[in-house]
Image (tube, rainbow, N blue to C red; front, side):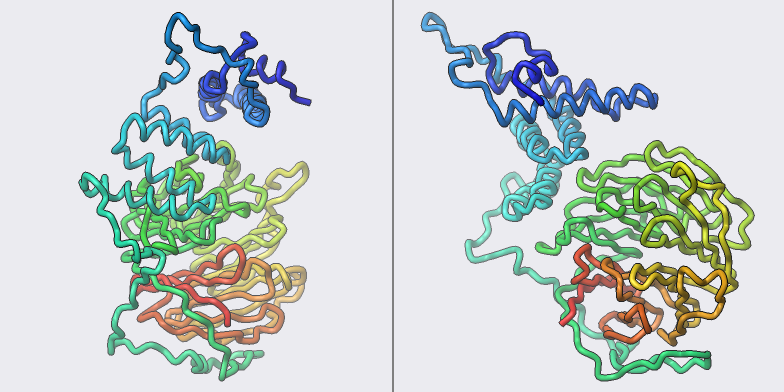
Length: 510
Protein backbone atom coordinates (compact mmCIF):
# COMPACT_ATOMS: atom_id res chain seq x y z
CA UNK A 1 0.00 0.00 0.00
CA UNK A 2 1.40 3.36 -1.06
CA UNK A 3 1.81 6.08 1.58
CA UNK A 4 3.22 9.61 1.51
CA UNK A 5 6.70 8.72 2.78
CA UNK A 6 7.02 5.94 0.20
CA UNK A 7 5.83 8.23 -2.61
CA UNK A 8 8.36 10.88 -1.54
CA UNK A 9 11.14 8.28 -1.47
CA UNK A 10 10.31 7.02 -5.00
CA UNK A 11 10.31 10.57 -6.38
CA UNK A 12 13.56 11.42 -4.54
CA UNK A 13 11.96 14.07 -2.33
CA UNK A 14 13.79 14.50 0.97
CA UNK A 15 12.43 17.70 2.49
CA UNK A 16 9.13 17.45 4.45
CA UNK A 17 7.77 20.81 3.25
CA UNK A 18 7.16 20.85 -0.50
CA UNK A 19 4.68 22.33 -2.94
CA UNK A 20 2.72 20.47 -5.59
CA UNK A 21 4.68 22.36 -8.26
CA UNK A 22 7.93 20.93 -6.90
CA UNK A 23 6.40 17.45 -6.85
CA UNK A 24 5.42 17.85 -10.52
CA UNK A 25 8.93 18.98 -11.39
CA UNK A 26 10.48 15.95 -9.65
CA UNK A 27 8.04 13.64 -11.41
CA UNK A 28 8.78 15.08 -14.87
CA UNK A 29 12.52 14.71 -14.46
CA UNK A 30 12.26 11.09 -13.30
CA UNK A 31 9.66 10.19 -15.95
CA UNK A 32 11.96 11.53 -18.65
CA UNK A 33 14.96 9.69 -17.19
CA UNK A 34 13.23 6.31 -16.81
CA UNK A 35 10.90 6.25 -19.81
CA UNK A 36 11.16 2.69 -21.28
CA UNK A 37 11.54 3.98 -24.84
CA UNK A 38 15.00 5.28 -23.92
CA UNK A 39 16.31 1.73 -23.35
CA UNK A 40 17.11 -0.76 -26.13
CA UNK A 41 18.52 -3.64 -24.06
CA UNK A 42 15.69 -6.01 -23.06
CA UNK A 43 16.85 -6.38 -19.43
CA UNK A 44 17.39 -2.66 -18.95
CA UNK A 45 14.05 -1.93 -20.62
CA UNK A 46 12.25 -4.29 -18.22
CA UNK A 47 13.88 -2.56 -15.25
CA UNK A 48 12.89 0.83 -16.64
CA UNK A 49 9.29 -0.28 -17.13
CA UNK A 50 9.07 -1.35 -13.48
CA UNK A 51 10.72 1.88 -12.30
CA UNK A 52 8.47 3.98 -14.53
CA UNK A 53 5.42 2.21 -13.11
CA UNK A 54 6.56 3.05 -9.57
CA UNK A 55 7.14 6.70 -10.51
CA UNK A 56 3.65 7.00 -12.00
CA UNK A 57 2.13 5.28 -8.97
CA UNK A 58 3.86 7.68 -6.58
CA UNK A 59 2.79 10.73 -8.57
CA UNK A 60 -0.80 9.50 -8.83
CA UNK A 61 -0.89 9.01 -5.06
CA UNK A 62 0.41 12.52 -4.36
CA UNK A 63 -2.07 14.04 -6.82
CA UNK A 64 -4.86 12.30 -4.93
CA UNK A 65 -3.31 13.26 -1.56
CA UNK A 66 -1.62 16.65 -2.13
CA UNK A 67 0.49 18.32 0.57
CA UNK A 68 -1.57 20.26 3.08
CA UNK A 69 -1.21 24.06 3.01
CA UNK A 70 0.65 23.90 6.30
CA UNK A 71 3.36 21.77 4.70
CA UNK A 72 3.91 24.26 1.89
CA UNK A 73 6.67 26.76 2.66
CA UNK A 74 5.38 30.29 3.27
CA UNK A 75 7.26 33.33 1.98
CA UNK A 76 9.43 35.14 4.49
CA UNK A 77 8.04 38.56 5.47
CA UNK A 78 11.49 40.07 4.89
CA UNK A 79 11.68 39.09 1.23
CA UNK A 80 9.30 38.32 -1.65
CA UNK A 81 8.13 34.79 -2.36
CA UNK A 82 10.51 32.73 -4.48
CA UNK A 83 9.48 32.11 -8.05
CA UNK A 84 11.82 29.16 -8.40
CA UNK A 85 9.06 26.56 -8.30
CA UNK A 86 7.26 28.27 -11.17
CA UNK A 87 10.29 28.26 -13.43
CA UNK A 88 9.84 26.10 -16.52
CA UNK A 89 13.10 24.26 -17.10
CA UNK A 90 12.26 22.57 -20.43
CA UNK A 91 12.06 23.80 -24.00
CA UNK A 92 8.75 23.59 -25.89
CA UNK A 93 10.12 20.70 -27.95
CA UNK A 94 11.15 18.75 -24.85
CA UNK A 95 7.75 19.35 -23.27
CA UNK A 96 6.06 18.12 -26.43
CA UNK A 97 8.15 14.93 -26.53
CA UNK A 98 7.42 14.32 -22.85
CA UNK A 99 3.70 14.86 -23.48
CA UNK A 100 3.79 12.41 -26.41
CA UNK A 101 5.40 9.80 -24.16
CA UNK A 102 2.71 10.29 -21.52
CA UNK A 103 -0.03 10.16 -24.14
CA UNK A 104 1.39 6.89 -25.40
CA UNK A 105 0.90 5.48 -21.89
CA UNK A 106 -2.64 6.86 -21.60
CA UNK A 107 -1.66 9.61 -19.12
CA UNK A 108 -3.82 12.11 -20.99
CA UNK A 109 -4.33 14.72 -18.27
CA UNK A 110 -0.59 14.99 -17.59
CA UNK A 111 0.05 15.20 -21.34
CA UNK A 112 -2.47 18.04 -21.73
CA UNK A 113 -0.78 19.90 -18.87
CA UNK A 114 2.65 19.65 -20.51
CA UNK A 115 1.28 20.70 -23.89
CA UNK A 116 -0.24 23.74 -22.20
CA UNK A 117 3.21 24.65 -20.86
CA UNK A 118 4.73 24.18 -24.32
CA UNK A 119 2.10 26.49 -25.82
CA UNK A 120 2.70 29.02 -23.06
CA UNK A 121 6.39 29.12 -23.99
CA UNK A 122 5.70 29.10 -27.73
CA UNK A 123 2.19 30.47 -28.44
CA UNK A 124 2.39 29.57 -32.15
CA UNK A 125 3.39 25.93 -31.62
CA UNK A 126 0.91 24.37 -34.08
CA UNK A 127 2.05 20.81 -33.42
CA UNK A 128 1.29 21.15 -29.70
CA UNK A 129 -2.16 22.62 -30.40
CA UNK A 130 -2.96 19.76 -32.77
CA UNK A 131 -1.86 17.02 -30.40
CA UNK A 132 -3.72 18.61 -27.49
CA UNK A 133 -6.81 18.82 -29.69
CA UNK A 134 -6.44 15.15 -30.57
CA UNK A 135 -6.21 14.12 -26.89
CA UNK A 136 -9.18 16.30 -25.96
CA UNK A 137 -11.18 14.67 -28.74
CA UNK A 138 -10.29 11.22 -27.39
CA UNK A 139 -11.45 12.33 -23.93
CA UNK A 140 -14.72 13.65 -25.39
CA UNK A 141 -14.01 17.38 -24.96
CA UNK A 142 -15.16 18.18 -28.48
CA UNK A 143 -15.54 21.97 -28.22
CA UNK A 144 -12.06 22.55 -26.81
CA UNK A 145 -10.66 19.96 -29.23
CA UNK A 146 -12.14 21.82 -32.20
CA UNK A 147 -10.76 25.12 -30.88
CA UNK A 148 -7.25 23.63 -30.65
CA UNK A 149 -7.44 22.09 -34.12
CA UNK A 150 -8.70 25.35 -35.67
CA UNK A 151 -5.90 27.23 -33.96
CA UNK A 152 -3.28 24.78 -35.28
CA UNK A 153 -4.58 25.15 -38.82
CA UNK A 154 -4.70 28.94 -38.55
CA UNK A 155 -1.05 29.02 -37.44
CA UNK A 156 0.01 26.76 -40.31
CA UNK A 157 -1.92 28.94 -42.77
CA UNK A 158 -0.08 32.01 -41.50
CA UNK A 159 -3.12 33.65 -39.91
CA UNK A 160 -2.08 35.82 -36.99
CA UNK A 161 -5.35 35.46 -35.10
CA UNK A 162 -7.98 32.87 -35.93
CA UNK A 163 -11.03 34.53 -37.43
CA UNK A 164 -13.94 34.78 -35.01
CA UNK A 165 -16.88 32.75 -36.15
CA UNK A 166 -20.47 33.83 -36.04
CA UNK A 167 -22.10 32.69 -32.82
CA UNK A 168 -24.80 30.89 -34.76
CA UNK A 169 -22.30 28.85 -36.74
CA UNK A 170 -21.66 25.34 -35.46
CA UNK A 171 -18.88 23.45 -37.27
CA UNK A 172 -20.49 20.16 -36.25
CA UNK A 173 -23.37 20.92 -38.59
CA UNK A 174 -21.09 21.33 -41.57
CA UNK A 175 -21.70 18.46 -43.99
CA UNK A 176 -19.68 17.90 -47.11
CA UNK A 177 -22.21 17.61 -49.93
CA UNK A 178 -22.04 14.64 -52.26
CA UNK A 179 -20.72 15.45 -55.74
CA UNK A 180 -23.40 15.83 -58.39
CA UNK A 181 -24.23 12.47 -59.92
CA UNK A 182 -22.51 11.81 -63.19
CA UNK A 183 -24.16 10.08 -66.10
CA UNK A 184 -21.26 7.69 -66.67
CA UNK A 185 -21.08 5.31 -64.97
CA UNK A 186 -24.59 5.15 -63.53
CA UNK A 187 -25.03 4.09 -59.92
CA UNK A 188 -26.18 0.46 -59.60
CA UNK A 189 -29.64 -0.45 -58.35
CA UNK A 190 -29.32 -1.43 -54.65
CA UNK A 191 -32.07 -4.05 -54.96
CA UNK A 192 -30.80 -5.52 -58.21
CA UNK A 193 -29.82 -9.17 -58.11
CA UNK A 194 -26.13 -9.73 -58.86
CA UNK A 195 -25.17 -11.25 -62.16
CA UNK A 196 -26.19 -14.90 -62.34
CA UNK A 197 -23.31 -17.32 -62.01
CA UNK A 198 -23.68 -21.06 -62.57
CA UNK A 199 -22.44 -22.51 -59.29
CA UNK A 200 -23.65 -25.22 -56.93
CA UNK A 201 -25.47 -24.07 -53.78
CA UNK A 202 -25.72 -20.41 -54.82
CA UNK A 203 -27.83 -18.57 -52.23
CA UNK A 204 -30.56 -16.46 -53.90
CA UNK A 205 -30.53 -12.70 -53.34
CA UNK A 206 -33.55 -11.12 -51.65
CA UNK A 207 -35.22 -8.03 -53.10
CA UNK A 208 -37.16 -5.24 -51.30
CA UNK A 209 -34.47 -4.95 -48.65
CA UNK A 210 -34.64 -2.62 -45.62
CA UNK A 211 -32.89 0.66 -46.27
CA UNK A 212 -29.94 1.96 -44.30
CA UNK A 213 -29.30 5.63 -43.54
CA UNK A 214 -26.36 7.40 -45.15
CA UNK A 215 -25.04 9.50 -42.28
CA UNK A 216 -22.37 11.52 -44.07
CA UNK A 217 -19.80 11.67 -46.85
CA UNK A 218 -16.16 12.71 -46.72
CA UNK A 219 -14.07 13.76 -49.68
CA UNK A 220 -10.78 11.82 -49.43
CA UNK A 221 -8.93 12.16 -52.74
CA UNK A 222 -6.38 9.42 -53.50
CA UNK A 223 -7.43 7.29 -50.49
CA UNK A 224 -7.13 3.54 -51.00
CA UNK A 225 -7.93 2.04 -47.60
CA UNK A 226 -9.93 3.00 -44.53
CA UNK A 227 -10.46 1.98 -40.91
CA UNK A 228 -12.06 3.41 -37.78
CA UNK A 229 -9.96 4.53 -34.83
CA UNK A 230 -10.83 3.35 -31.32
CA UNK A 231 -12.72 6.61 -30.99
CA UNK A 232 -15.77 6.04 -33.21
CA UNK A 233 -15.70 9.75 -34.13
CA UNK A 234 -12.43 9.32 -36.04
CA UNK A 235 -11.64 7.46 -39.25
CA UNK A 236 -8.20 6.75 -40.72
CA UNK A 237 -7.38 6.64 -44.43
CA UNK A 238 -4.26 5.68 -46.37
CA UNK A 239 -3.66 7.14 -49.83
CA UNK A 240 -1.68 6.60 -53.02
CA UNK A 241 1.04 9.07 -51.99
CA UNK A 242 1.87 7.12 -48.82
CA UNK A 243 0.14 9.49 -46.38
CA UNK A 244 -2.10 8.35 -43.53
CA UNK A 245 -4.77 10.83 -42.45
CA UNK A 246 -6.98 11.02 -39.37
CA UNK A 247 -10.39 12.63 -39.94
CA UNK A 248 -12.90 14.01 -37.44
CA UNK A 249 -16.40 12.85 -38.31
CA UNK A 250 -17.85 15.83 -36.44
CA UNK A 251 -15.96 18.52 -38.31
CA UNK A 252 -15.44 16.51 -41.53
CA UNK A 253 -11.84 17.75 -41.47
CA UNK A 254 -8.44 16.08 -41.45
CA UNK A 255 -6.55 16.93 -38.26
CA UNK A 256 -3.49 14.63 -38.20
CA UNK A 257 -1.32 13.36 -41.05
CA UNK A 258 1.36 10.66 -40.83
CA UNK A 259 3.80 10.61 -43.74
CA UNK A 260 6.58 8.07 -43.14
CA UNK A 261 5.73 5.87 -46.17
CA UNK A 262 7.24 6.67 -49.58
CA UNK A 263 4.66 4.86 -51.74
CA UNK A 264 0.98 3.96 -51.73
CA UNK A 265 -0.62 2.54 -48.59
CA UNK A 266 -2.01 -0.92 -49.33
CA UNK A 267 -3.67 -1.84 -46.01
CA UNK A 268 -4.48 -0.43 -42.56
CA UNK A 269 -5.07 -2.75 -39.60
CA UNK A 270 -6.11 -1.68 -36.08
CA UNK A 271 -5.10 -3.81 -33.08
CA UNK A 272 -7.81 -5.51 -31.05
CA UNK A 273 -7.59 -2.88 -28.28
CA UNK A 274 -7.55 0.04 -30.71
CA UNK A 275 -4.15 1.31 -29.55
CA UNK A 276 -1.88 0.32 -32.45
CA UNK A 277 -2.34 1.08 -36.14
CA UNK A 278 -0.43 -1.15 -38.56
CA UNK A 279 0.15 0.26 -42.05
CA UNK A 280 1.49 -1.61 -45.10
CA UNK A 281 2.85 0.06 -48.22
CA UNK A 282 4.23 -0.53 -51.67
CA UNK A 283 7.53 0.84 -50.36
CA UNK A 284 8.15 -2.57 -48.72
CA UNK A 285 7.72 -1.27 -45.18
CA UNK A 286 5.22 -1.90 -42.40
CA UNK A 287 4.86 0.77 -39.71
CA UNK A 288 3.42 0.30 -36.23
CA UNK A 289 1.89 3.52 -34.90
CA UNK A 290 0.68 4.41 -31.43
CA UNK A 291 -2.53 5.94 -32.65
CA UNK A 292 -3.56 8.12 -29.70
CA UNK A 293 -0.22 9.97 -29.76
CA UNK A 294 0.28 9.71 -33.55
CA UNK A 295 3.84 8.46 -32.99
CA UNK A 296 5.80 5.82 -34.91
CA UNK A 297 6.71 2.83 -32.72
CA UNK A 298 8.39 0.30 -35.00
CA UNK A 299 9.24 -0.26 -38.67
CA UNK A 300 9.29 -3.73 -40.24
CA UNK A 301 11.10 -3.97 -43.58
CA UNK A 302 10.68 -6.47 -46.39
CA UNK A 303 13.76 -7.17 -48.50
CA UNK A 304 12.03 -6.26 -51.76
CA UNK A 305 8.69 -5.57 -53.33
CA UNK A 306 5.40 -4.20 -52.05
CA UNK A 307 3.67 -5.36 -48.86
CA UNK A 308 0.02 -6.12 -49.63
CA UNK A 309 -1.28 -7.66 -46.41
CA UNK A 310 -0.82 -7.29 -42.63
CA UNK A 311 -2.48 -8.72 -39.55
CA UNK A 312 -1.75 -8.35 -35.82
CA UNK A 313 -2.67 -11.16 -33.43
CA UNK A 314 -5.39 -10.38 -30.90
CA UNK A 315 -2.88 -10.43 -28.02
CA UNK A 316 -0.69 -7.87 -29.89
CA UNK A 317 2.34 -10.19 -29.71
CA UNK A 318 2.79 -10.92 -33.41
CA UNK A 319 2.51 -9.13 -36.74
CA UNK A 320 2.07 -11.19 -39.90
CA UNK A 321 3.05 -9.65 -43.26
CA UNK A 322 3.05 -10.78 -46.87
CA UNK A 323 3.40 -9.29 -50.31
CA UNK A 324 5.04 -9.21 -53.67
CA UNK A 325 8.19 -11.15 -52.77
CA UNK A 326 6.17 -14.35 -52.07
CA UNK A 327 7.45 -14.55 -48.49
CA UNK A 328 5.30 -14.84 -45.38
CA UNK A 329 6.92 -13.17 -42.37
CA UNK A 330 6.09 -13.43 -38.67
CA UNK A 331 7.40 -10.59 -36.47
CA UNK A 332 7.59 -9.92 -32.75
CA UNK A 333 5.46 -6.80 -32.32
CA UNK A 334 7.17 -5.60 -29.13
CA UNK A 335 10.69 -5.22 -30.54
CA UNK A 336 10.13 -5.58 -34.30
CA UNK A 337 12.31 -8.70 -34.53
CA UNK A 338 11.69 -11.13 -37.38
CA UNK A 339 10.82 -14.50 -35.85
CA UNK A 340 10.32 -16.63 -38.95
CA UNK A 341 9.92 -16.28 -42.69
CA UNK A 342 8.53 -18.71 -45.24
CA UNK A 343 9.76 -17.97 -48.76
CA UNK A 344 8.88 -19.40 -52.15
CA UNK A 345 5.13 -19.28 -51.78
CA UNK A 346 3.30 -20.22 -54.97
CA UNK A 347 2.55 -16.57 -55.71
CA UNK A 348 2.28 -13.15 -54.05
CA UNK A 349 0.37 -13.00 -50.75
CA UNK A 350 -2.69 -10.90 -51.37
CA UNK A 351 -4.65 -10.97 -48.10
CA UNK A 352 -4.31 -12.15 -44.47
CA UNK A 353 -7.06 -12.66 -41.88
CA UNK A 354 -7.02 -14.13 -38.37
CA UNK A 355 -9.73 -16.04 -36.55
CA UNK A 356 -11.49 -14.67 -33.47
CA UNK A 357 -9.30 -16.54 -30.97
CA UNK A 358 -6.07 -15.37 -32.60
CA UNK A 359 -4.74 -18.95 -32.82
CA UNK A 360 -4.95 -19.33 -36.60
CA UNK A 361 -4.50 -17.01 -39.54
CA UNK A 362 -5.33 -17.49 -43.20
CA UNK A 363 -3.47 -16.27 -46.28
CA UNK A 364 -4.82 -15.79 -49.79
CA UNK A 365 -2.39 -16.07 -52.71
CA UNK A 366 -2.89 -14.31 -56.01
CA UNK A 367 -2.76 -17.55 -58.02
CA UNK A 368 -5.54 -19.29 -56.18
CA UNK A 369 -4.37 -20.92 -52.95
CA UNK A 370 -5.71 -20.33 -49.45
CA UNK A 371 -3.54 -21.51 -46.56
CA UNK A 372 -4.26 -21.88 -42.84
CA UNK A 373 -1.35 -21.30 -40.45
CA UNK A 374 -1.05 -22.21 -36.78
CA UNK A 375 0.37 -19.24 -34.86
CA UNK A 376 -0.18 -20.39 -31.26
CA UNK A 377 2.08 -23.18 -30.09
CA UNK A 378 3.41 -24.35 -26.74
CA UNK A 379 4.56 -21.60 -24.39
CA UNK A 380 2.74 -19.10 -26.62
CA UNK A 381 5.42 -19.23 -29.28
CA UNK A 382 5.01 -19.33 -33.01
CA UNK A 383 5.09 -23.05 -33.74
CA UNK A 384 7.29 -23.33 -36.82
CA UNK A 385 4.64 -21.46 -38.78
CA UNK A 386 3.14 -24.88 -39.45
CA UNK A 387 0.77 -24.91 -42.40
CA UNK A 388 -2.38 -26.66 -41.25
CA UNK A 389 -4.02 -26.98 -44.64
CA UNK A 390 -4.62 -25.32 -47.96
CA UNK A 391 -7.28 -25.05 -50.65
CA UNK A 392 -7.00 -24.20 -54.31
CA UNK A 393 -9.30 -21.20 -54.73
CA UNK A 394 -8.65 -17.94 -56.64
CA UNK A 395 -9.11 -15.55 -53.72
CA UNK A 396 -9.04 -11.75 -53.84
CA UNK A 397 -10.27 -11.03 -50.29
CA UNK A 398 -10.59 -13.06 -47.10
CA UNK A 399 -12.17 -12.68 -43.66
CA UNK A 400 -13.01 -14.70 -40.53
CA UNK A 401 -16.30 -14.47 -38.65
CA UNK A 402 -16.68 -15.28 -34.96
CA UNK A 403 -20.28 -16.45 -34.76
CA UNK A 404 -20.56 -18.74 -36.60
CA UNK A 405 -16.85 -19.56 -36.88
CA UNK A 406 -16.44 -19.44 -40.65
CA UNK A 407 -13.83 -18.47 -43.24
CA UNK A 408 -15.11 -16.15 -45.98
CA UNK A 409 -13.29 -15.96 -49.30
CA UNK A 410 -14.10 -13.78 -52.30
CA UNK A 411 -12.64 -13.98 -55.79
CA UNK A 412 -12.09 -11.93 -58.92
CA UNK A 413 -15.36 -13.06 -60.51
CA UNK A 414 -17.53 -11.81 -57.62
CA UNK A 415 -18.14 -15.21 -56.04
CA UNK A 416 -17.91 -15.69 -52.27
CA UNK A 417 -17.48 -19.11 -50.65
CA UNK A 418 -17.90 -19.70 -46.93
CA UNK A 419 -16.35 -22.65 -45.07
CA UNK A 420 -16.83 -23.85 -41.48
CA UNK A 421 -13.56 -23.18 -39.70
CA UNK A 422 -13.58 -26.37 -37.62
CA UNK A 423 -14.25 -28.78 -40.50
CA UNK A 424 -12.66 -27.21 -43.56
CA UNK A 425 -9.67 -29.57 -43.32
CA UNK A 426 -11.88 -32.64 -43.75
CA UNK A 427 -14.82 -31.17 -45.66
CA UNK A 428 -13.69 -29.31 -48.74
CA UNK A 429 -17.27 -28.45 -49.76
CA UNK A 430 -18.23 -24.86 -48.77
CA UNK A 431 -20.97 -24.28 -46.25
CA UNK A 432 -22.56 -22.07 -48.92
CA UNK A 433 -21.66 -20.08 -52.03
CA UNK A 434 -22.80 -16.57 -52.96
CA UNK A 435 -22.99 -14.83 -56.30
CA UNK A 436 -22.20 -11.64 -54.45
CA UNK A 437 -20.89 -9.03 -56.91
CA UNK A 438 -20.35 -8.35 -60.57
CA UNK A 439 -16.56 -8.37 -60.87
CA UNK A 440 -13.88 -8.63 -58.19
CA UNK A 441 -14.71 -8.83 -54.50
CA UNK A 442 -12.58 -6.00 -53.14
CA UNK A 443 -13.13 -6.32 -49.38
CA UNK A 444 -14.68 -8.66 -46.80
CA UNK A 445 -15.14 -7.22 -43.30
CA UNK A 446 -16.69 -9.26 -40.45
CA UNK A 447 -18.96 -7.45 -38.00
CA UNK A 448 -17.20 -6.79 -34.64
CA UNK A 449 -19.87 -8.75 -32.74
CA UNK A 450 -20.05 -11.55 -35.33
CA UNK A 451 -23.25 -12.78 -36.99
CA UNK A 452 -22.84 -10.63 -40.13
CA UNK A 453 -20.20 -9.60 -42.64
CA UNK A 454 -19.97 -6.86 -45.27
CA UNK A 455 -18.55 -7.12 -48.78
CA UNK A 456 -17.46 -4.53 -51.36
CA UNK A 457 -17.17 -5.07 -55.07
CA UNK A 458 -15.92 -3.82 -58.38
CA UNK A 459 -19.59 -3.21 -59.26
CA UNK A 460 -19.78 -0.22 -56.88
CA UNK A 461 -22.01 -2.05 -54.39
CA UNK A 462 -21.72 -2.68 -50.65
CA UNK A 463 -23.66 -5.67 -49.32
CA UNK A 464 -24.20 -7.02 -45.81
CA UNK A 465 -24.88 -10.74 -45.24
CA UNK A 466 -25.75 -13.02 -42.35
CA UNK A 467 -22.92 -15.37 -41.49
CA UNK A 468 -25.00 -18.46 -40.73
CA UNK A 469 -26.82 -18.89 -44.05
CA UNK A 470 -25.63 -16.05 -46.29
CA UNK A 471 -28.91 -14.16 -46.36
CA UNK A 472 -28.63 -10.67 -47.83
CA UNK A 473 -29.35 -8.07 -45.12
CA UNK A 474 -28.96 -4.92 -47.20
CA UNK A 475 -27.43 -3.59 -50.42
CA UNK A 476 -25.99 -0.08 -50.45
CA UNK A 477 -25.41 2.01 -53.59
CA UNK A 478 -23.88 5.45 -53.74
CA UNK A 479 -20.35 5.17 -55.08
CA UNK A 480 -19.48 5.97 -58.68
CA UNK A 481 -17.14 3.14 -59.59
CA UNK A 482 -15.52 0.33 -57.54
CA UNK A 483 -15.67 0.22 -53.74
CA UNK A 484 -12.10 -0.27 -52.52
CA UNK A 485 -12.41 -0.90 -48.78
CA UNK A 486 -14.82 -1.22 -45.85
CA UNK A 487 -14.62 -0.76 -42.08
CA UNK A 488 -17.03 -1.17 -39.16
CA UNK A 489 -16.70 1.07 -36.13
CA UNK A 490 -15.97 -0.73 -32.86
CA UNK A 491 -19.63 -0.63 -31.80
CA UNK A 492 -20.67 -2.19 -35.07
CA UNK A 493 -23.46 0.33 -35.69
CA UNK A 494 -21.76 2.30 -38.49
CA UNK A 495 -20.17 0.95 -41.68
CA UNK A 496 -17.70 3.06 -43.69
CA UNK A 497 -17.18 2.44 -47.40
CA UNK A 498 -14.33 3.93 -49.44
CA UNK A 499 -14.78 4.26 -53.18
CA UNK A 500 -12.49 4.87 -56.12
CA UNK A 501 -14.53 8.08 -56.53
CA UNK A 502 -12.59 9.57 -53.58
CA UNK A 503 -15.55 9.42 -51.20
CA UNK A 504 -15.92 7.79 -47.79
CA UNK A 505 -19.57 7.16 -47.01
CA UNK A 506 -20.96 6.28 -43.58
CA UNK A 507 -23.98 3.98 -43.33
CA UNK A 508 -26.18 3.07 -40.37
CA UNK A 509 -28.82 0.33 -40.14
CA UNK A 510 -32.40 1.54 -40.03
